[in-house]
Image 1: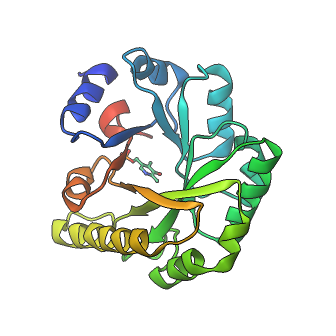
Image 2: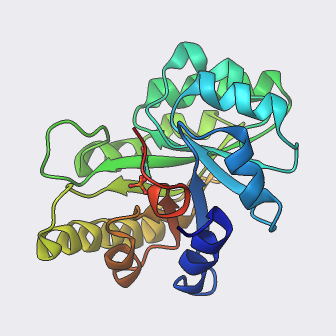
Length: 222
Ligand SMILES: *Cc1c(COP(=O)(O)O)cnc(C)c1O
């Protein structure tokens, strides 16, 4: 059996320069995170506020915490003091709450807008039209304490590589077009977060520069 350190190194060796690896540690204990931390890894992702908060409290402050799950507005306040990047922003209402809590903490919070790219019904995210409306809307200018730094998407959970690739390529297109169009001072797209353990190689081919990888590093979850 390979160790977390070995699996981390092996994943890292497949990533191109400039690609950020978010090690998804959800359901895994603090000791597992420390194994990766001890060899220099700093970006970790969690999908539940309570679990993220509990881990952040007991682990080193140098960790850059990524909130990758669906975030409820009433829980933003718990993450606002320290969260590094919120991946799952899918409404203006949520963005407004993040802005409010960021202001209270005298900081700017970086966010990714989550776009619905999968053919499955169950995954969260904005439609292409909703993304355009949000990005072009005047209200964004008022949110001085958030910065939209990119887009995030999850492909269909399928072994049909052609389908998964076309979803990733669609998001890359949308990312390129949105990047060109945006005129707000707090929108500067540099991050395209797509790809998980099972599909990150396809995501990289489509132009991802941030992958969120859990089980390939920490082992399967229950
Ligand atoms: C759990 C999760 C991942 C990682 O999944 P693996 O298949 O374990 O790599 C990536 N992104 C999101 C949003 C997740 O919830």
